[in-house]
Image (tube, rainbow, N blue to C red; front, side, top):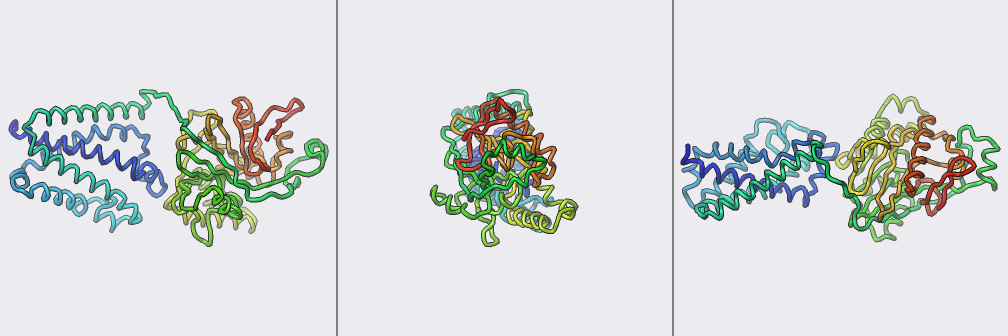
Length: 447
């Protein structure tokens, strides 16, 4: 056995180093992190799982096993000029054709699973990179393996990979805390207005004439529908999509085509927030990942909830389901943070926070915009001047009026104490501002 150890060692480090390099390239260039988070790939472990962190270390054991398997074939595959090419073809063939379980990307996977073809072949480029690096490293080890520098370098790289893997496991398992720095160099938030109109106070539940007179001395207020564009390090992210009336023209004024939208974060699935996701019955943003709270998705997909609504509101369910269906391969369902819970960033510089009541999965998004946080709070208010002075007033659109009021009060207290700017989908231009306590009761909104 001792005389076979050099051969097994070469296979082990060639595999481990090739796997590590191919994995790093895949995660950064091919955006695996985003791809694996899609609902259609829910069979994948989340990247936060500790076993993902220790995976590179486990590859050392896997490489050792590969070495043992190839040991009987040593003479067959390692003693002629084309031996490594033969080995590479053999490994690719076994990976694709001789996998008896219905693994995605394998021959069995194509036949026995309903996973779309493009989801199955997404890993092929990484596999090609891996096999190419593996064969190249084997070639180098065969030709120069007798030199100490090769073995010393291989040992150093293996130790580094092992150390990084153990550290990754410890961090993901919560054994080591690393201070977070979610601030990037430049984050911008832009208002994209879908239009304004005179607001209607009839939507308010329990508003007395005295309340309305105090909050609206002239008897009227401006209502609007807004979308917000967040630009982070070259990425274009929409929060909601409005009706789609002015959305595409507004994007053009910022020099952005629909294909350049990387993500759309939905606060909730009412028509004035998801209408712009479709254009001529097709997806408006073909390259975007659609982010939606799991509770929101479950609500709009619930037949019982739909059947309890009027025919007009049932159309809203059907429209939402059409959007979900057309974006199903780009749909990322998530559970937003509770306001007082541990912070989990939905993506760099953006945190999703539950603010249910208006709908069961209504979500607000806290954006770290150039050192000044902005909370984009969706439909936390509809009649802004009235609901600032009297935040206890719900609206007829709220699925759970009592919970909607509770969420509003919690958010208002949070942004006031933490001096966080806010932006809302039904706040008149500029759509953003600061909240302060009103000495007479309620709150003040200062644009």
